[in-house]
Length: 120
Figure (spheres, one colour):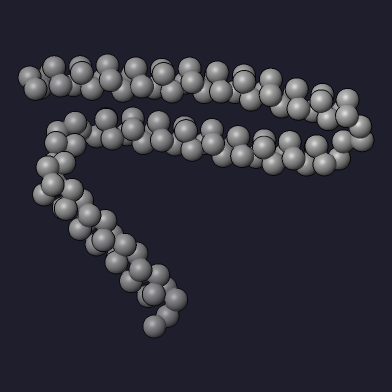
């Protein structure tokens, strides 16, 4: 079997597995998610992507901190590096919390509006 055919077979197997999982979810009573509509799913996805991007950036900054600390020549330089890191982290966490709150508000208000329009 060629590499392209193997890849296609793997992709087909993965798609079938996802289809089976979604069918099981629906059988377990989670078919209500389909009533929420694509907007809700998209907003949830956007929130997840935002959080993953934030986590990725935090990890990069943590690694950079370790690198900087390893290259400090004295205690005062180390304290300065740590202080700058903590201030940046505090600012980023505050900013990210604001973004997530805004996205969550839009998510819930958008969802309530959609539910109200359909009479549910």
